[in-house]
Image (cartoon, rainbow, N blue to C red; front, side, top):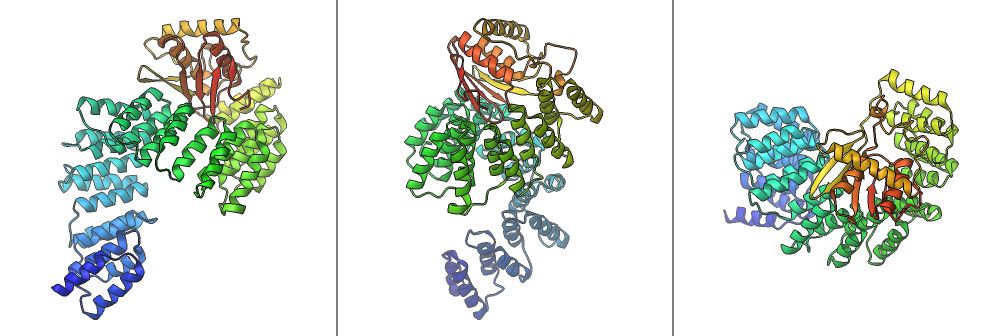
Length: 579
């Protein structure tokens, strides 16, 4: 027994495969190959530990006689965390077929993780049935992993159902529900979870704070984010690098760059994600030159940038028209840091050249990209053609989108706007007929705004709100007062809509951000900054109107669209009409 304990101690202190091979040799020489405790410890190290080897673990597993549940758990866990999660599912099936071992809490938890990572929704439902039949539905850990699995397979309703049916919930379960909502894009629902937790007087940990801050960032809920910042400060969470990173991201995505800088400056420890958060945040807010400054500081402290770092830099260069700088960073990726540019980097370069009117250079970038078949690249070029009214190249971009079977209603509407502004009404009719004949559908434009701690969502032409009449009256006042200080409606603003839902006989279809801004003006005190998040790119007319609203009402209005931030103040926009 003392010899076995000695071997187990050696395995416990093992720190790499080279050392493990020597210990394994001793095990074989001393005849302990089939000792259950040693075999399991050996398997666990190879399958699960960071310095282990899953292939070696599988060899050990396949040679083990009388496989028991702990051994199955080790190998299933190993594969569930690997690049081969389907193998974990196959092993579970084999375990059930052989019938010598029964799954336990850990088996189901590791299996559900594999189903989540393999996006095996059908298997998830099958496992759910097994969990109920074997009496594990009341186990908090199993139910929490089941919830995550449904959430990862776009089954948010089932995830909520599992959550609601749990007889007991710990903080991990609440955090998982927040994560499921956030993953599904239901960020307002994620924030509502916090209200439920407050009623039950549940404590929050760092994971809760990070999850809620992520949702705050997505919907632009700065006031909610400020509450989370105060809570993190009061509970000593600010030393946690993940909390700090989430705060930087939240402030930047809410358009509060001062807040992002302050959090960054006060962090005692920073990792690559910290630097990426501030660089990307500055980039999307149109501060490419400042993002460059932080990049130089990052290099000075000895941190190696990654592909996300360069994405932030290229985005910032694109929004500020820094063509030479952007081209240099794109070159630097591979030449100095051995990083292969991805489609998103090529997309930034197409956007950089396209915004600057260098459409031929943008087209050449697409041709040189690893995938000229990627729709994002052609769609980016199409947007640039809209800015510079190059109908011919716009038609070429659309032709390529159709060729690769990737065209959508948004592309048709964009080209339709180009035709309208060029006075090509035959083209407008052709695009409308194409959309109608092919039954092309699109998601309506929507905007979020946070008012008095509540997130309100508006869609184009939205009349569903109880206070619609008040919003409508404020909308008319808003447009009238903007006109008094110089606003003139774009000639083609309503000729071609931002979504298909606007193509109707009802002319009272205002873009979603106009409704959100009107609501904000009606419901907030004078002088308060309004923050709006929009799922589409802001159109020319809405951009012009918002500039004059900021002047007429003496308000700062921050709009985050699908591509970048616009900070409107005193009749001007931070983008300098370059977007």
